Length: 496
Image: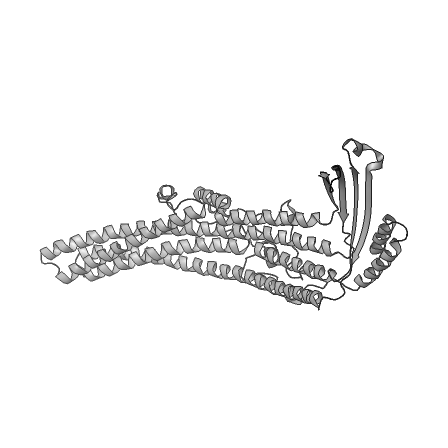
């Protein structure tokens, strides 16, 4: 109440005698009414119980969490690092989000300007004639000022809402950066995996073609039947049929990577053509506790800022039901000749004050407050949903990584055994100890296990990428920019 009283007293001193007391009475009545309009608390739906640790054993290390801002460098692949850097600079979704952030900041500045007085300058020259009289000139120059004191905080609440929306826009930009970086890495891993599978298929095809040629020679010598020879040729043709599919996958992933980096589809075909191994991330990843991970996730921060914006809009709608005040004044010069403008007698000044109090609007103002309360409840529900999905993303990624690691270990052992079996089968067949069908079966098993092992290697790398994305890696959350200020603990109700 003391702030309101001091503002009203200052306004009263600026008014001429005889007019300020009525205005002051209205202002004090409005101030008393305004004290009964508290800002509502955040919705209870926004509070989320965050677990103290992840379910995966050893997920959180006591030495501190791994820094995730540039997680792709952990794959030790310079080309992957370069592609992600290009995408973060030139991807159309990123540049669009950057433009949206600039727009949000400009809108915030417009709202902030509404708290300050406005000053306009004007100048005019007029020549007029009435009837048969002589023409007369009029020259004017002046300044017009106006100010709307934010007695009940409506404008301040609007600025708070705009500031929170700006912070949400900055976090949304970070969310897009996280998604784009992960998408580039996943497409790159898929491309390298297809290249490795293509090389393995070609190697096995060469062995199968050699076996088919031996079968043909033995058929001509009467040592094999046409059945074994045709089975050998069918196995080689089946392997050959996989090559176009793998080549198509390689080219399509190259096209996707080019578009993600803001280039035409074929721009990266030459750079990606040389075969390289599937990038593998280091296994020394140390996870932060769930609450700290939620602080890193840009989508969680964006949802939290939307709750803050909704809180401010409720306060703004509530303050709009209270009286509003306006001070205005003008100072100018007016004369019939241009030279006389500088004389003291040409000075013209005016000072005015006004108050506006909603009396009857059919309940529209109260309905706006209810609408903003409903929007606040919606924002709280969205916040809770985002937090729960963030926790699920991390847990799912941890489970997938653990399972694919175990699967890869078994497939590596199976691939080694299948390779040995194929070698032994050929040796024993050459010695007449096994039939030709055993050779075909062992070669087919070798091809399948090698292909599955290559895919499992790529799956483990992709699981690392998805885990980095789930942890919110790929953007700078804490910088000197106010729009990236650290968010509060997600286990508590978002700040108002």
